[in-house]
Image (cartoon, rainbow, N blue to C red; front, side, top):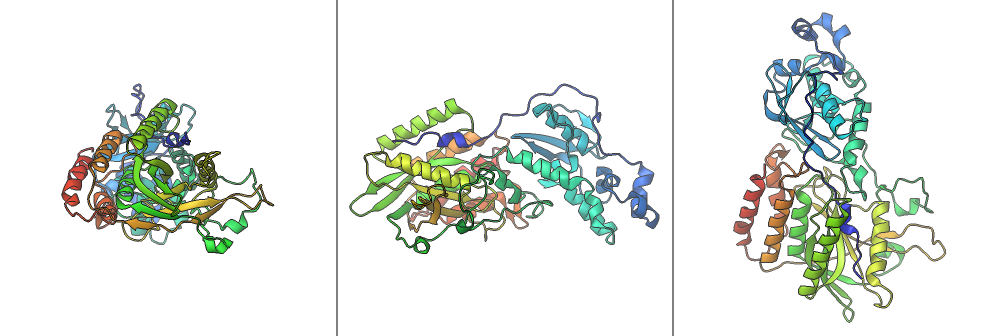
Length: 469
């Protein structure tokens, strides 16, 4: 039985709607200071009265060289929509889409967000608008460190912690339901450095033994540490071998977007040797809640599996900026897929789950963290407990060459995400010495086939990625 519904887990968005012309700066929340007031910010007499978040404007940051004017250097990401703006010499913002001029980040953010969500009351401008990928509020902090190092740093964020919490929650809604709130502990992808966001609330994984009986009030996005089979007095009931081409295509898919992705795994199950061989990854090129598209994608994958003589043996999904550990919702999904795949008459057949974490700041180096896992049902005497997530030991098999199937899937993915607002900006920097393109190349190199000619083939794919911007 083919477990339907996985393809509906991903979510993206359409380009922003064309707004009506509004009065420039009409919704402005933050006060602009006159030139004289701005010049007083660095004087002793100005520190006591002007050291608030409203006192530091874009004009101040421009004057002191913390930011520079430029086309397309400002952006807002909100509920799957992306808005791009130019920073002008006078500190005002020109929205690229319409050419409208806004006096402050708050005015621009409020206007854009109300186009998406008319009920939105404010724009949380300095926490929402990013300059070259980094939130503007961090530049306020940098200004104070430089010009008023003795100041109470809590003043710079007067009211902004609440704004950022609101913004992060809203940004999380663009993610897949399995782990949408994980975005609160994921890194910024920006041109300066990998700096955790002010106000980030790190999602600390919990141990399974602390969960106890199911509780409807418990956050379904709680991450759970994996147990070992030996820790629950069991042996791993099957062996797993995964092709390097599977890892390469899966890792490539997960690197393309800041939203979660999902895909299927095709392979074979040998009941005699108890070996599950994963030979093919099938990325789902669809979005959350797009049920018509999801159904068509799954039908196409069914046909591809049948044509290749493969069976459905598992699934994968990403935690773009969080640990590659299952959430409570992931555990339930995995258990459901295991039961559906097994069916009523096939006997035991494993269903492998894989989580890929490409952009988590806790990862070492540029390589994604890839976590194969399985779920052991709770003890019979405790049927209301969660399933037990366990780490699966896997043998990775290096393929001889990059197949045309994999290359074709990569190009289809590039085309699918080409105009998406959640496409990763590969020309930007992952860390000071590494661009996003360098990062994806470095991560994929860990799944290289034996035939090194693959590198020339992949360069064509990478060039297509660069040309998407």
